[in-house]
Image 1 (spheres, one colour):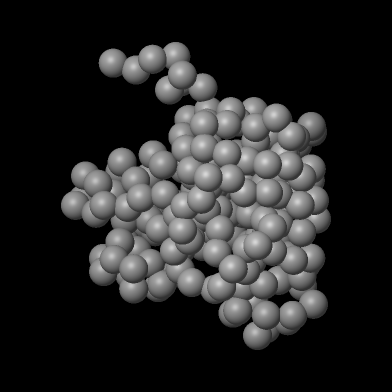
Image 2: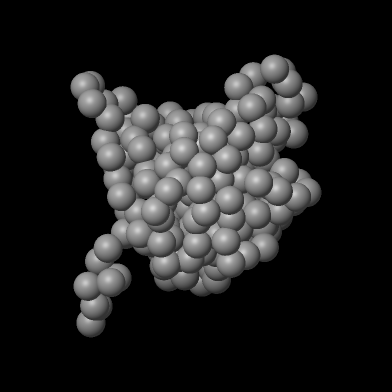
Length: 186
């Protein structure tokens, strides 16, 4: 049995880390900064901060300022014997009640009372996931019945409006106007 609170899309955890590690520690609150990312997080900045992308071209715009991951995947992988908790997949914001992977590019996610991010694309799950938990990559990267790749590594976004985001904050989804584009890896 679920109560109405569980049906409302919510932030169930926030995480940040000032160094580049796979998992991020859960904290009480994060501060989003417009055009920058999460204050105090190693992936914040106007240009790419992910080491593999910096090596290719450090002048690329940072389309991966804030990583959001839906806790429903934790439920799915638990059925396969994996225990994953907020922050462990490297996400900054863990959500429940929003089909992040089904959102179109450009969707605005209003987090709490102030903050807003624009979804830029999918996180492409990588081998680091198997370093965290051997075999987990096959659970978050697979193929559908048509043979298309299915990526369950969450979505990436940029900060449109800054503000504090906390566990329990509501999430409001604002779909883009006009033709909607399916998310692609960024």
